[in-house]
Length: 177
Image (cartoon, rainbow, N blue to C red):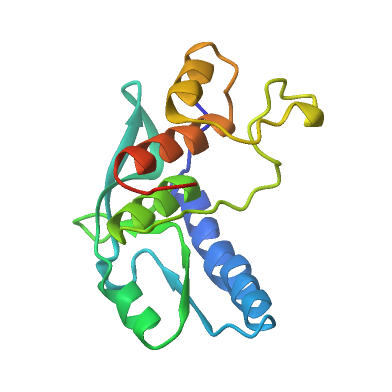
């Protein structure tokens, strides 16, 4: 279903890489564009509360399913003209850290902020009718069409969670993705 297993050792590495390298590189890149940015974790300020995610009843390790989003820290940063750059690590009620699919985190945060638009960054141009053919990118896709492509197995693998999160965000009030 396009989701990855995360064991305890990998979770420690995920936190180090996302916080120490990826997030800080994104902050630096955004700041070179003249935008003040702040790198934060989904754990900061209790922003992303999660519970353990199970896929078809199977335990996939330290992967979290978002229960709630507290937007206070995001609003505080934005009120001070900082663009928050969030890395997708959440915390459960016991204080344990969980990896969260980045698309799921973006979707949940956009919904909680009542965002008008949500943009994803990806190494793929978008949904393709033929995953192997870059010229088959669909430039505009409506929820009903996306659901049909998922049902038909056209959308699969890593694109599946992205599209499912897009559909959920659109149904929850985000106007455009």
